[in-house]
Image (cartoon, rainbow, N blue to C red; front, side, top):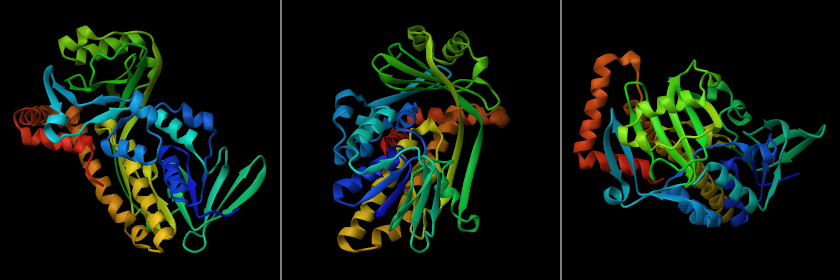
Length: 385
């Protein structure tokens, strides 16, 4: 087999890259080690920046998003019960849309025109400094795909970044000493916008998937096990961390999904190795506090698609030559914002009383400064690429 671009990974990043290339007439094949049902079964959040919504429009897959997505013109932060509303529309003239990552994946999967090979085992990348090709096995048979370029969109634990020699790769990482215990419930959200709450007991987040389905989180220690958290224990802890009015309005019910997600910040540099390019979680991880993960992945593949389209349409290597530097500039800004939001809203016992007073001072400064609120709104709704 031969194609122009081999895409590793059929998550939203790989599928979006494939869709943009399909629309531009650039031949591509996607390889995914899991089944299509497994990919669609991944439950992920989805707060979409305006740039991501625009990209869905460009990819001609935004019909359901505009019909079902929940437009949020702001968000609420609270600190020990004191509330602060950040009005995105008033501050920066933009908004975000809540639309699950699973739904983004479904829309892209259904629109897929090129070939996607699911359950591709033992994927291996070869000769990406020369004439690249990819091998894999399926149903006991080994296959080979020759290509011009390889796009590694296969996530943090994927084969793409692991194929790069250690001497060629620099990584930067911070692993946080806590995670988010999340619960999904078929009850209306407690508020029409997200609520980020700091409390001395720990962080809490009130989120949503639809007008009738809610997602809630509480900060827990990295050593915690989900089995130790009954629904009753979770709801009691969540109420304790929210302001009294919100806690009183909270509608509880039996969980339909419960899990603990660890938090880490991670960046790999560079993002190009000969004819291999990294994008999405293969290149970076952010804590979910700033809602940047999916949006960063979409930004990456938008840049990479433009680079490939320019290469094939104009015979120009400029886009592919500058992809790594251009993407990393945006990645590090998003990493900074996610780190800042995480630092403000979570408890860090090792920081002591002084550290918590600094957090309080940061919240008070934010509450009293329109310029500070504009900076938050600008970053949350999405910086330009």
